[in-house]
Length: 510
Ligand code: BES
Ligand code: MN
Ligand code: ZN
Image 1: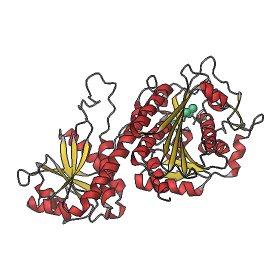
Image 2: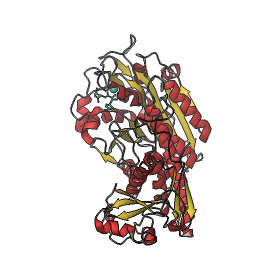
Image 3: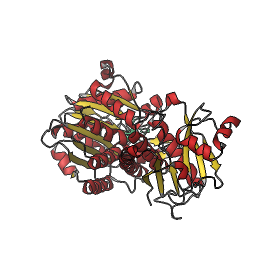
Image 4: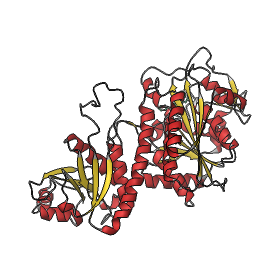
């Protein structure tokens, strides 16, 4: 059963619940607000633990206090919020995810929390509730579809655990903002979990056909138009770059197009979201080494985030037209596979020499971007697990961003400020274009070892042409190696929430 995040009016001190979550900034010795009220009701138990040095308020610190009947809640959790100066919605997401897993381990199935930071923390009330919903739901996320022993995870923990979390608020004027924040956060978290599921499913299940089926379910659920192009139609459009990658696989490729019309009278008010959907990347004839190749089931994470963001956008209904395009195929070394040295022609007539069949993402994206432009898209963001070099450059802390429009890059960064997903821009200097010069074609698909993430973006730029375009390389950020805050080990669903936020922001003028 999915966890629900509710809002209730009342005094936290009087709220009957198995566990009540309050908070503390680092360095505070006399807690105020709701935490102070609970402390007084517990005869100073919290402030004496602070005085003893057991509670410091550091971000990530959780202290369980048994109330022994002094208040209706059986337990109080004091969650450290870190230094007040570093506090933001990211801290709330972090605390909410950590608390949810902590209480699930204790066997708690329902608990209450105060709205972190909405008082002295200076956060917008709705933003606090949104971050609580996101942190809680995403932090509790589990993928146990393939376990035959019910829904037990590697630690033997059963089920999702938490049925409901209630945000308790004393001030009646805040209730509506908290409720709508919780609703938005729930939508964004559920969409992100869809992206995670798509990535976590193995590649024998999550084929291009299955991705298209998922897109159909999303389209029906939230009211989007769907077009799924097969290889014959792609050939009619001259998508030689995409089809060159697909030809080595027995699985039929799909170019999935989801359309949301939030401002039908203004076609110029548009946004294209283009996702790499390689459902398994063996490298093709330029075969990858065996070690860790299983991780390449996640090479469709960009496409997954686009389907998921379209679900969120279809639910939240911003006043903008958004088209999601997912280039879905396997990259396999079959008997019909393309060879190093092959030259392919993309939909816009530009030719590419395939130096390395493992640089396949840029090839499928090239045609998807051309097709987006043929649909009238003048502003687009592509999302791709594009280069191993990106993992080396930025690791897992932020997503690499490149593009031809500093304005759109700023807007993506700003959307990331709201979502807590972070982006760092790399330079698109003309000098890098030299690295993908080909002896026989307009460009080659690999620039060698130097600046591997930027040369990949340089190739994509040839297909954005005069559209405003930003490229997000999520090779590092699409998966997490351990649980922390709203992240759990495995797929992250990045940058689903940022893409949805971007559409919302653009609909409101930037
Ligand atoms: N899907 C990979 C990139 C990747 C690597 C994503 C590790 C996530 C983790 C991509 O298709 C690829 O193989 N890129 C090559 C490009 C090279 C051949 C120019 C790479 O990065 O090695
Ligand atoms: Mn590859
Ligand atoms: Zn790939």
